[in-house]
Every structure is written in C-alpha cells, then in structure tokens.
Length: 356
Figure: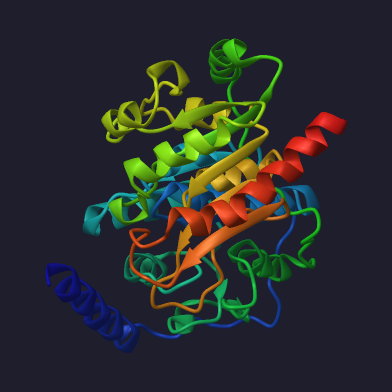
C-alpha cells in the first residue's frame, strides 16, 4: 500500500513538473566535438549502470570527449571501473543536491547533459528542468519537453536494454555498433588475485557457478531446489562454486559445504572477479549476468517476467538459456522444468570444454 501511494505521488509531481517547466529550445543539430564536456545521468542499481557502459565505451572511442557521470550511491562504483569515464558525481537528493550539481556543471563547464534512463524518472526530470546547460539528450518519452534533442525509444519488447540505450549514439553523430557492444567493467588486479587464490582448489575441471542471490526474495529459488541441483550435477565431471551475499550465507550453508561457497562480502569487484573465472553460470536475474556478458561466459537464468512485455535483461552478445515465469516469484518454477532445460545446456558446454 505504501509503495502504491509513493508511485502515485511521484506521478503527480512529474505531471506538475512538466506543466510548469518551459520547453527547452531545440537546436537544428546537436553539437558534439572532442572538446565537449558531457555529463551522463544513470541512477538506481548496479545492473542499470552496467548496461550503459557499452554506450559510454563507443562514445569515448568515436568522439573522445570528456565523460562525467552522475551516479547513485548504489551504483557509482561501476563507473569507477569503467575506463571511458573521466569523473563521477554521486547524486544527492533534495534541493541542496540539485544546487551542488549545478555548481559542478558551471565550474566544469559541462555543455551537454545525457539522460541514460530508459523510462521516465521523476528525480532525473527535476534535475533536467533546473540544469544550466545548452544541450540535453534523451530517449523520446513522456518528459521529452525537458530535452533539446531526442531519438526514438526502440520497442522494449523487441530490443534489449543495451540496444535501446545505444540509440543515444545517434545524437553524437554515429550509429550504434550492436555487434561490438561490450560491457566496460575493469576488475582490479587485487580482486583477480583473490579470486584466483580461491579457485586454485578447483583446478583441472570445468567450473560451474551457482548464484543463489538476486535483488529481491522473489528471485530466490529455494534451498531444496538448489540442493537437488547440486545432487544432479554430482554425476558430471565438474566443480561447482556457490555464490552468495552475506544475507543469504546461512542458506548457502544449508545447500552445500562451506568449502564450495565463494566468500561473501560487500565488495562487488571481488564478486565479479570470481564470476570471471567460471566456465558457466546458473543464476536468477541479477546484475552479474552482465559481467558474464563481458567475459563471454554462458549463462542459464531464472527470470520473473511479471506484468510486463519488456524483453528480459539477459546477457548481451553471449550464449544464454532461461526458464521464465509470468508469476511474481520463482516459487512455482519446478525442479524438473529447470532440469529439462539446464542439463542439455550444461552438457553442450562440458563437451565443448572437453573437446577443446
């Protein structure tokens, strides 16, 4: 109930904002050069940040302009690992945060603002309405009067989120390169050393990662299902590693022995380093599938697609198989349903590794 009231309140605020805001002056053509100073906005979660990095990589490569990012306290570290990004500002809510941001824009002579959000954000709309810049780019949507230039938003049921975001490259004077779109997340050497040290106990065999955590309890498949999965794969010549966070660590210990659990912690970089050492990953829908995409690691996913026609956020340009439920949770996804799809996928990659 509280969530519904919050959503309704945000919708009212957005409508008032759009009514009161003046339409931005639209120039005939965007002006972007290697000397341009561009601030991109991407708030919210880790996955939301990761899927924008292919665009930033292509803009830096094609244009070479200065790239800053206004990020969230929950995802800013992603951009710290993105080689295309020159500087990062963490978003602060309320009027004081807007004032601080506008001071940054003026001090650093930012000439272009880019809204990377695929949907309409009330917070971002407020930022755009107050921003002292000449150009504001975004996908064409309900708040388009706040932009100076827009491109059409691709159909969300037919196009991956990375493709929809890459459309913004057209405002920078070039067409998106879907084929070479790559997530740009550079793992620290210290994290790689940590992951390699842990993985050394599993040398010589195929490594299957089983991630049991995601962004919400709705995506937890259940202790008994994961125990049954581990029992099933014991018939194969492979090693398995269970990935978890601190919140689900006790559940992980119910599923398997602690020696098979990758050490949980709050550092996403160490988590990503462990994922990068796998041959295949079994996981619910979560941000680490985009790390798999970067390292071309095959993914078998469990997805909740509840009351939406949007394409799922699958790994982009890497091999993928999934069980998708239209229900609100994974609770009724049966073990046999998953087994019948997962085992052929696993055997295919086991055989490929064996033959190589």
